[in-house]
Each structure stands twice: as structure tokens, then as C-alpha cells.
Image (tube, rainbow, N blue to C red; front, top):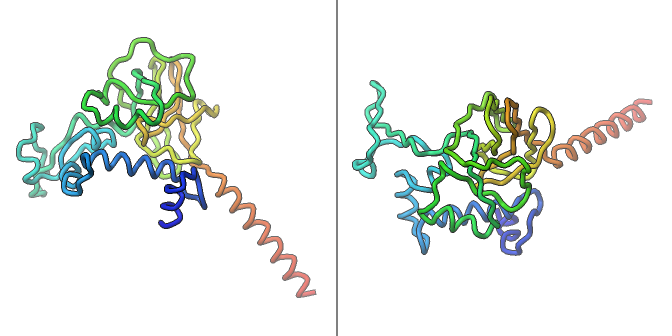
Length: 239
């Protein structure tokens, strides 16, 4: 979109409903997947085979082909499906509890993620904001969680009998998303640049992510006022 591209070029956070900062991060993330300098052929090949970028995005299933002939994970093929299907068990799940959390400035996240030394199953990267007073002292491998509700505007995750950590959902931290732990709003954290999370303490809790942007509220108010105005004008015209 031209408006969004102009906002990115001018370093404007938001413009006309577009979130330029998040879009810029997404572009930088995908460019890093395409090599240095970015190469469209490299990018296309990496989308068809497991790598650090696809695993961070939770891409865990691939259709077989020449690029996967040397893939070490055994193929899984339904009886009625001729092309082999491969599962990457190293891809991150849709939702998980992270206990290994490293705080970094936003500018250092992408080089760290793409360095080859980053273990996505042992730690996540979070900007130096929204620190929790109850952060785990002994990081361990992420604990997969199940989203009991997963819709475009509402994600619900039940966390049962776990220690403190960061509940992460592989979904963009777009402005307008809010996080709630047991119906109490908590700060929303941007995780690994392109995911979102909320801190939880020890015990069983319900974590909700709800998309409720101000633009929806403003649009609703304008619609109601317009309807009231039209009703008044229509009644006056009839009388």
C-alpha cells in the first residue's frame, strides 16, 4: 500500500490505520531469511524447507518434493494423498510457555534470531519493556500449550499447574491486541519480533488475547451518531 510504504520511509509509527513499525520488522525478517543480500531464489527455497525462520513462525508441515529428499524427518502420507507430507518437529507450536527469556533492544533481535546460535526451543527474545517481577530463574525447554479458542480476534489459552513464564502465541503483536490473565489486563509483550506474549505466575491461569482496536470503537460511535441523526431528520421530514 502506498500509504504504508510512505509511512515506513518516513519512520512514522502509525499512519491512516497502518502500523509501519511492525510491517518494517516483517520485511526485515523475511529479507534475513532470503540471505545477505536478499535473493528471491534463496527465499523461495527456504520457504520449502525447514530453517530458523520457518520454525520461529511455526511452519511445521511441508509437501514433499526435490527440496525435501534429504529431509531427516520420516514422511507422513495419508492413503489418499500421493505427495509425501513431512513434519518438522522443531517448529514452534502455536502457543507455548517460555521460561527462557532474554531481554534485548529491538535492533538486536533480528541479528540474534538469524545468527545460527539461537535455540528457539530454549529461549525467546523480548524487548526491554514490560519486565516481570516473577521471571523464572531456571530456564528450560518451552512447554507446548493448547489454544482452547483460536479465532481472528480472540485467542484463549489455559495454563495449568505451571511455573512462572511468558505465554507466547505465534500471532503478530499488532496494535489493538490486549492481553488478560484471569480477566485482569496485563501488558502485551512483543516476542521474537513477530509474536505476542503475556507474563503469568505460578499456578493455573486463563490467558486471553483480544483484538480491540480504538478504530472499532470510534467507528461504532460514528455509526450510532449517524443513525441517530438520520432518525431525527427522517422524523422531522415526516412531521
